[in-house]
Length: 250
Image (cartoon, rainbow, N blue to C red; front, side):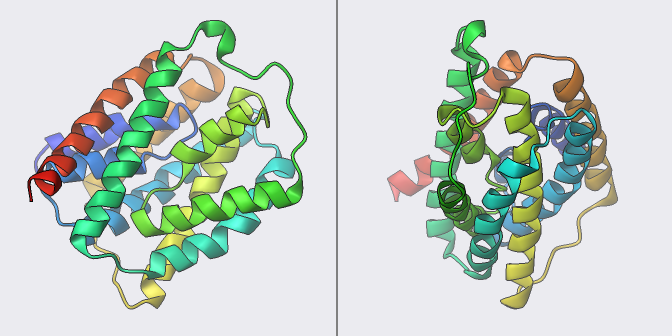
């Protein structure tokens, strides 16, 4: 185990946890750049997601930023869909195409967040959304989460902000809990389908937990996230390009 991989995981976990995310797209980016195979990348990203999302959920809940009225319908829709998605095995080329699309969308979202004016950081007034709308949104994101090994926060957060569902920090707390449920469901779906969960290095798990603890504390209690979003946008864009170039050249 070289030192750069745990260090990269720690940095990713810190940056993502500060906005209520668990870091799956970042872990996928790091492992892709390291040349790991897709069958290792997806379940490993979910394992690390569970670690970081658990810490982030507890931290945002302690800070009073976890509205259960918003969370429950999303989770009810997402958990079965994530389980189904996690049970589906994708061919490597399809997997890489889907993940590249996920990374591009995530990078665009993060870049837009980093460039927005400070006054636009939170919705002016939360809007009331129906249970069916929230459950449908959760189901769509949950299926994609299970298919790709991504917890879904990179899609859920911008959707909730665009719908004015809650203030920014509440959205972060809901995203952390949503990611935790989807990651567990995705892992369970993979196990039912006969796939095994790879053994993750203790150093990598420890790095994820330390990064998640640090980042979620800063995000829930102290720091703005605009600069962090800009940095992560660059990381994800680089990984997406690395995936897309061989696919386009084939």
